[in-house]
Length: 319
Image (cartoon, one colour):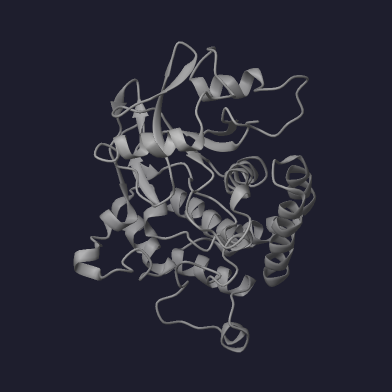
């Protein structure tokens, strides 16, 4: 239930358990909590947690092979099926995030936060992710692109997370990341992935830098990756405009981006054309592997069909 690979028993493979637990430790795949328990615990933790967003979530810590609520110094974030009203496929949201994160890591080679799908005491699925801003109990300095860009609701309005362009992401990265030439390709690959997998809520707070073991500021592992269009069919194709002012003829005529728009963005980022073309062409080559992982996922059957419909629609736009 972590990597979606076949195993001869219920639970996690040894390798997945090691990644989740940070070593050869016991790690639960069924938790003794209900969704109501989680919502109640979220209220208790509300004054202490710094995790942004509106989705129900609580902080946990691994103690003697069990995951227990943690008001501070949490090691994991648990997200059950949201209690909020969602237009479509609400019960598929934990499986959607788990699946999309696995595709990003396994198929596209994107560094992602360690994650898994677990089950609550009533059998409902919940998404679990291990925090990457902790090491040996010490908090690693981390700032999202809103913080780095000096954007806040008080100064930039209610939509401060969205009133930006992908071009601006590149400028923020160039300003704060000494290893820009390496990290900007990772940023480009993530932006491309979000487009292909219909993540229409990849706003500024979903991109962050933290300090590496070598004391360099680099992109954090990817997080909050979902096919959001499954649940919100009327949302924009992208959370952020791609460009400050440039508009391709294709976009002007059709209202959505295609391969040449991404290659133009790569040019602006300073990425060599041959490397950008390779990243774009990789999307079409991912079809078979993606379909295989979707088939093994915990999405409902109708959810699987919709997920692949969204994926194939986006592929047709850039391939």
